Image 1 (cartoon, helix red, strand yellow):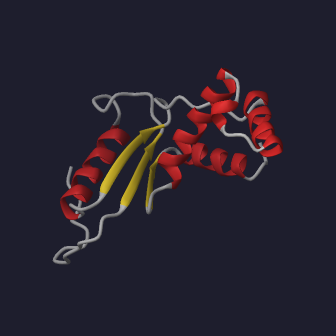
Image 2: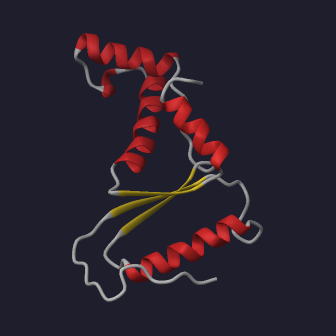
Length: 131
């Protein structure tokens, strides 16, 4: 499967950070959407040789929802002006896991999503406090 090349004939010298986000528990061999996504990435890499691409599969990421441990840790940090290294081990682990996921997702110039529309809608609703 091939896609037309992007930016044909244009020389780009600046590097973009790209997050390619997918949510699929299947392997590339058994999933058509994974195969399409990989073909897209191959064409994208060919035409954007300077870009750094991070692939994130939400089924393989270990991040916790924001629960009591994270809220308590944030509260201690804000109230007492302490760093995360001064929290208890559970609070540290959960906050660090959440920060790692957020770093991967938000510190990108571009985000490409290859996920089902239902999941995208649920994520956007959750981010806005509707779920």
